[in-house]
Image (cartoon, rainbow, N blue to C red):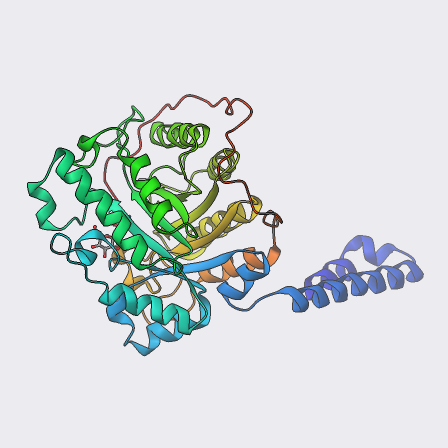
Length: 383
Ligand code: 9MR
C-alpha cells in the first residue's frame, strides 16, 4: 500500500498535475489499496496448508516417522501441512520384510498422526525397483509376479479407505534418451506388469487415486517425459485404472526447474489424469531458490487438475540432499525466503480445481499435442 501511494504522489508527473487531479488520484489509489488490503486479509492464508486449501489444493511433506518425537519438527508439521507421505515406512522392504509377513507398525503411526491432526496421506510406494526386501532377489518370472501382485493387494487392502492417493508404481522408466522402460526385475516379469499392478491396487482400494510417480519427467522435451506420457495415454485409451501422475521434481543445477514445466503438467492433465507434485526440493538458496519455488507453485495453481504439492522433507537438515539446502525451512526450523515465495504464490491464487468429479476412464478423444521431439537426455544421476 505504501508503495502505491509513494509512487503516485512522489513522481514528477504527479507534482505537475493540478491539485484536484492529485487529490482524486491519491483518493483513488487509497481506495484501490484498501480494496487490495481487504481482499488480502479476507483470503490470504498464513500457513502453506491453509493457503493451498483456499485454492482447493493440499500442501504436503514427506515425514520420517522416527522424527515424530522431535518437537520442532512436529510443531512445523502440524502447523503448515495438510498432507503427508511416508518417506520410507510404506515401501516394500519396510512393509513385507519376509515373504507374506507384513509389518505396518511405522506406516500405521504416520496414518494415526495424520488422522489425529486433520491431514491426508499419500501412500508411497507399492512397487519400486529399489528398497525391495532381500527375499525378492531370489525370485523371478511368474513367482516374482505373484509375489509383487500379492504385495500390492495386501498393502493397499490394509490401508484401504485411509489413503488419498497411492504411488502404485515408482520410477519404472529409463534415464536414457529412448523413452523406454527401466530394465528391472519387475519389468522382466512381463511388459504388462505396471497395468497389472494398477488393476490389483484398484481392486484392493477403490477409493484411492492411483498414481504413476517418477523423476526427470518435468521437462516436456525430455525422452523420459514422452515415454511416461505415451504410457499414460495408452493406459487411458485401454481403460487401465490410472488416476494421476506424480512429478517428483527434485531440482538442482544438473536438473533445474524447466521453463516448460507448466506445459508438461497441462499436457498430462489433458490426458484425463490428475497431476501432483510429489517430492519437491530445489537445491540452492536465497532469491534464486525462492524464485524457482514460486514458479513451481504458480505452475501447479495454473493447472486445474494439479491437486497439490508435497515437499520432500521439512527442514534442510531433514533432506536426503541436506548439503544442497533444498527445503522451505532451515535447520533450526526458521522459514526461508523460499517459504515466503511459496506462501505468496499460493495466496495469489490460480485456476480452481474442476467442480465435478473428473472422469477416470474416458479415453482421449483428440490426438495428443504435437511436441518438439526430445533433443536432450536427462541427467543419468538418479535422484
Ligand atoms: O528420502 C528417501 C531416503 O531416506 C531413502 O534412503 C531413499 C532410498 O532409496 O529414498 C528416498 O526417497 C526417494 C523416494 O522414495 C523416491 N524418489 C526419490 C527419493 C529420493 O531418493
